[in-house]
Image 1: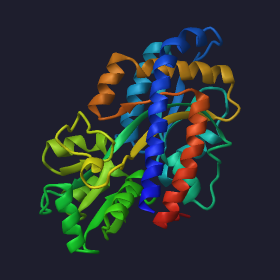
Image 2 (image 1 turned 45 degrees about the vertical axis):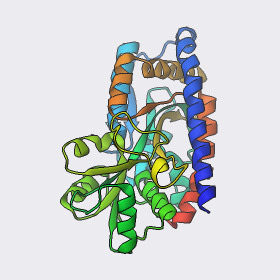
Image 3 (image 1 turned 120 degrees about the vertical axis):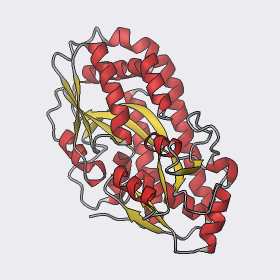
Length: 336
């Protein structure tokens, strides 16, 4: 079971890296050709972020929105519509007019929801037109400093000596932060209690306060807590160490070889959006992702730049929906 899980994680990682490689060529060639195809945008574009302001998804979306505004001379406005693990914002965009002026800045929750929710008001594979992947953010294993552990191995040993006594926070049932911790627990034999929160902010508040013991939160939402010594970082979930926290080892190099998981992000538009608009939007996002200022800000957050064609993103989204279906089933998570 464990080998199969981590094989699927490695396959997903390879797919992400393939997107990055393709992105390098597309970012240089696509914008010049795409700009000649259609006069878009001619008015502000709304980029719906299906999570609250200030969260890990919102942080990156705002960086890209600012750069796109500068590139295209029209405002890209962030509209936060949080709730239901991203589904409220997703439903809004799925039902929006496909005129090119409403898009969803989605996360991996778009691939998780079909397995988590019995009844959804939209279908991620039928109601959206993929534009591109944007970035992936590693998760980081965080503990309250009062917990008597200073390494991930010490943490695992301590948890095993206290089965069922530790609790871990997440940004919500079925959220990537929940499943990241679940997979780590499963792979290392940890028995702990899951405490879901409505977003990362309250989860981090209680972790700092000691109401819960650990969390696998997104890196960009965790760095400041670590630098301020409010929380202790034990490991990151990416295949390689993050330059943001270079002294923090990976899960893969310490306790679970092959462990590689992150919270990926992308952009989709309503189904039936004009292909010419999708093509130009794709080209402009790829161009934005190569902007020195965007690269600088994303790297400071510990985010890895991706980028893909619409077709590649569609294939990746389809594969992630299948992959997460198995993970969710194994975790035994269901939401109404």
